[in-house]
Length: 156
Image (cartoon, rainbow, N blue to C red):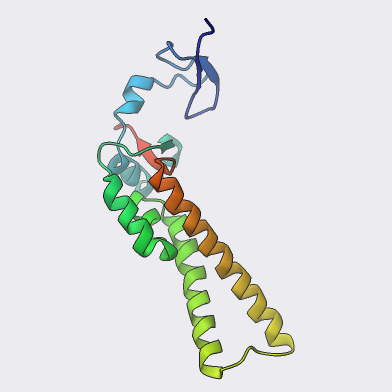
């Protein structure tokens, strides 16, 4: 029978599943399974992002139900990214969702789409907002199927 292989979450190196330490980057898989999201948030605050790894699945200190609810109700604003400490991606969602909402309100107030050069800007903003909404729906699916990447880190 063929031995199963796994990929190291840090470096992507393909190793047999029975190996406990990655031969390429020396990541201890047992210690990695105990890594926490709170420690990753702390590492980001200290500027030590090199010791943070994005992990598929929820670590012990992240509630999957809470993450799913935040993703459904606040995901278009990036709430789920803020919850797990991925603030840059959360800011991306917040900025473009806010631009999309303001753009929609202005269009609603004016009761028409702009024409001429303003139409070009309007079209680009609607397109960007559409991309954010599609990413939000994809994130709902990822969280639902436990495929959303959550930063984790080991204590120093």
